[in-house]
Figure 1: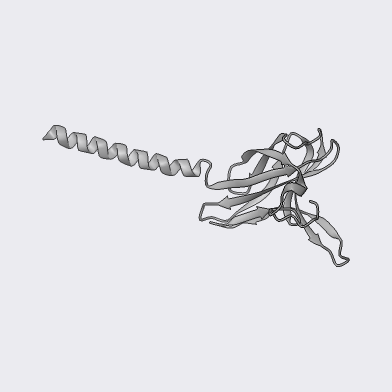
Figure 2: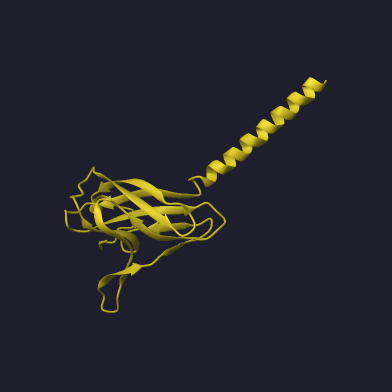
Length: 162
């Protein structure tokens, strides 16, 4: 009887430990996820932009506070919007809110990651590494495919770049 009781305690402890480990796994990288990411083609010394959908699976608000990449001299967060003269302008942003249990869409004609001073051409089929920096979450490093912007039908393209 003691042996059965000890076995039940051991099995119960192992189950609780496994459940705890599964919960930790969620906070080790899946609490903020990036989906549908891509960067547009561009020439060396020029600029490109990266777009994606970010989802915050946590119950805490966060902020995207920056990004970095080894393919560019600098990387900034920008907002494209129409000014009073009807001209599209890009406004650098210090951060973008990522609400708890919410989404943040980075898309052409809106918020995007501006990749400035390219060290190489970005051609269709290439991949670049982009690291996202958050206020409360650890960095997320993505391998992003380079795609032709006009082939992105249905992705929010409105004819304006970025």
